Image (cartoon, rainbow, N blue to C red; front, side, top):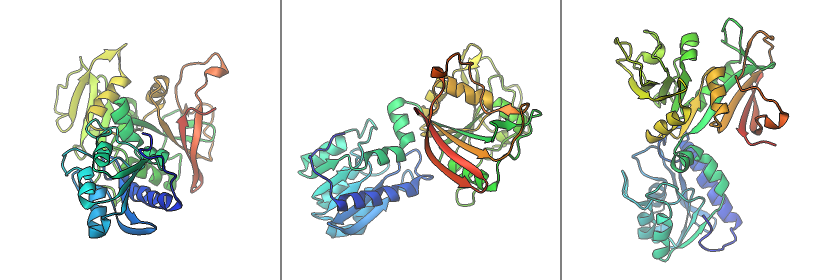
Length: 370
C-alpha cells in the first residue's frame, strides 16, 4: 500500500509506531487466528492512549487506545500497525471508532489483506476527511504477522521447521535415540515457538519412534494448546499414543482408503485426503489447515517428512538448534533431500537471527540466501 499522503515521517512518528509494534508483539501467542495489532494515540510527542489486541473476540487495539485517550483523541494522531477494520465481526469496525473519536490523522504501517478489510478501512478514513499516511515500518509490521499474511494472501500457513542437530549434522543415533541432543535452554525455547504457533504438525514416523506430546509446557502458555496435526496415511498411530489422549484438539490426516476400525481415534478428528503417488499431498494439507484459520504451522518431524516439505518448496522458515556434540557417520541425517548434480541447485538459506541458548546455537533461517 502506498502512502495516501506523501508525508515524510518524523522522529516522533517513528517512535510512536515502534511502540505500537512493541505492543502488538505482546499478542504473539494469544491473538490467533487474528493478526497481532498495536495502536498508539498521540499528540506530538505525548502519548495519550495505547492498546494491543489480546485475544480473538476481545477489544481491538484501536478501541483500547481510544478508551484510554478519551476526549483527548480529538485532533490527535493514531498510529496503527495494521489497517483498521471496516466490517462488523465479533467487535465493531475500528475505522468507525477512529472517525467517531475525531482523530485528525491515522498512520498505518501495513494494509490488511483480509478480503473484508483490504483497502476499505483506508477508504472510510479518507472519506471522513482524516489524513492517512501509510507504509511507516511496513516490513516490521508484515513480519510480525507473517502467518496471517501467508494464510490470507497465499491460502496456506507460514511453515516453520523445527530441527535440532549435532555439530556434524545428525539428529539421532542410528538406533533412533534422539533425547536429548540439545540442552534445557534450547528445549525451553522450542516451547515458546510452539506457543506462538497455531498448529504443530508431525508424521507417523515420529509418532512411532518418539511418541511425542506436542504440547506447550510453559506455565504461562499451557492453556493456549495449538492444534496438533498428525500425518498418518494408513492410520498406524498405536493405541495409547500421547497424540490420541484427547487432552488437546488433534487432527489426524490420512489417506482416503484408510478406515478407523476401533476406538483408538475416538478422541481426535479424522480427515481423509486423496493420495498422490501413494502419499499425502503436502500442498493440500496446507490448504486444509488454512481453511481452519491456521496462520503459523510448526513442523516437528523426522528427516523424511521435513525433507519432503523442503523438496516441495513449502518451507518458509527453519528454527535450527545446533549442539556442540558429535554423533558420527552412522547417526541419522538432518533431512532426506533429493540428490543434487550441481552446486547451483543447492538450497540456499538466509540467516535471520542467531543467539546462544546455554551451550547451543539457535539459528533462524529462511529460504532465499545468496
